[in-house]
Amino acid sequence: MAQLEGTILLLMLLHSILGSPIITNYIQHICYCIGSPPDPNTASKFQILIVDPDETPESLLSQYKEMGRTVLAYINVGYAEDWRQYWNNTLLQKIIHNETEYEGEYYVEYWNSLWLQTVTNYVEAYLNNGYDGIYLDNIDAYIVLNESNYTWIQGINLREEMIQLIAKLSTIAKNLTGNQALVYVNIGGALEDLEGGTILADYIDGYLREEVIFYSQAKCVNKRVPPSDWWNQESYLIQGVKAGLDVNVVEFVQDYSEAIYSMLVHVRWGIHVILQPSCDPDYTQPPLQLSQDPTGMYTLYPSK
Figure: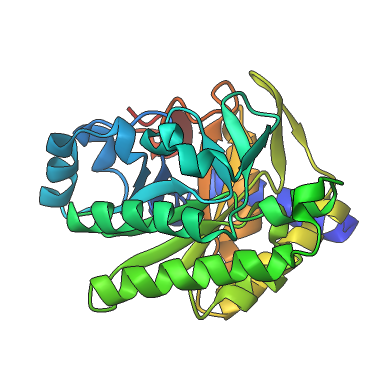
């Protein structure tokens, strides 16, 4: 690990002297913008946009499509949220349980046919409205529940049920669009358990993993993970790339050096990086960009 760290630092020094356009190319791959949909100018800087349809007017979606952008619809499949339209469904309330650590978010029996139908309705509506695919969040809910002692999960193979949910939703999305719809997931804490996403490779086109090298400790405060720890995660991400998946990593950074460090670690393996500002850990702002200034050096700046 010490040798790897030294190599990265050397590459950072060389990059500061020589510059490299590959940094800009990779930073523009995907925008994880679930907190606030990007304006058209910001959206033009990215190839793929992940947005929450409940926050995205149809007129804005149309502008994204006219610009030739790929747009994925955010869906929380692992947990239920009390601000969604389905919340007042009395039948659905029977399979919704304790609140998670996030306000307004609740554990749900995601293996129940009622939940499958609920999510399916969203998938069909979004694809029919012009979205290019779906982004399924919190698929690692099964790991969280496996560590609990809730009585309502007894006898359930939580891992297999989540894999089957993803498989079913993927099949629905692909069949509806002639196999054209893209299916991405937030693999979260399931990265290792799902072997870098290879176990889901038949059902998904790509995934996102947050905070491999830098994580948000508090608002505007981040912390760097020791190389001995993040390399284990990196090895699984590389497996995903080798399986043909579009692998993306969110890193919460504060300055240029942290941005370059993140890029130099991930890019060489074909992993795309989303540089999220550490002062906005809830994705209330679009990702950061790296731009080459007149001196030939790269600087970090807000993308909007």
